[in-house]
Image 1 (tube, helix red, strand yellow):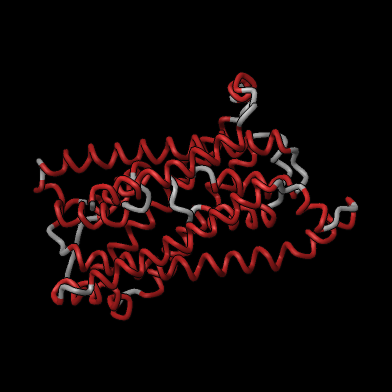
Image 2 (spheres, helix red, strand yellow; image 1 turned 180 degrees about the horizontal axis):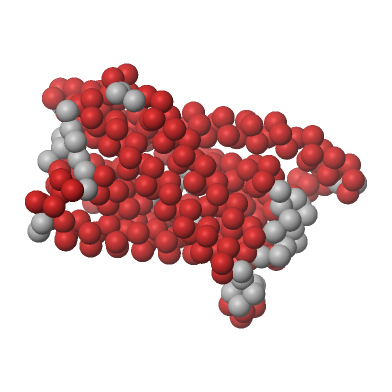
Length: 331
């Protein structure tokens, strides 16, 4: 029975992502999509991908900082590799990254799984707060401009909503339902996890480690750096195509916020919901639908490729480091 449930939990996210992608890209000219890569400004894309590594690096530094009050001192190298691998693992099984991170740290640094999981949960809370602040700020700064855009173009909110087909509404509702369902499942797992007293103590020690941080300001700066890196990773991609290069930073922040919430839907790297959210927001800002879905597909594909490459780098580096433990003190 457990194996069937596990298969279903893996199958549904993949099926949802593939279903949304099929619905969005059915009838697309794949030859034209391929040719569009010739017109992509690769210098901007490479810069965007470089900034994609920045938040992962800041995550490693922040995690290292959170583990110190627990008496654990993993190297930056091991923390970085664990995070690289965790993001790649989530492509195969959505949301397995947190478990992979902590398991990798236990295997290569001997750190209690429950302790490291507690620090991961704590940083998720911090990230959620920052994500909400970014979303509110983006909406507040863009609302006047968005209303001016509607007035100038003569477009009413009703006209915007009418562009959604019944399938579009269904996809939106399904994504929201799955995001809420996943949050409920996560809470249930935490409660189930509390059955083991020793594990629970380590878990809550990890969460409470934020209160005993040696450098709380540095932890906050790392957290801000993570989201700044994510934003630049996304925003710089707009310059890869002429039809999105004119989108200003504030508008890009609102689109970024929408894409971030879309990733909460448990599909591999947000595939499907991410494309739908980005395409919808680009269309609202005046980008034609065909270029908008092209942008979403190309950018997400290349960003996913980066995650795979970094995961492979982390795995190779950890296996190399395992045979040379004496070098860890240098890192």
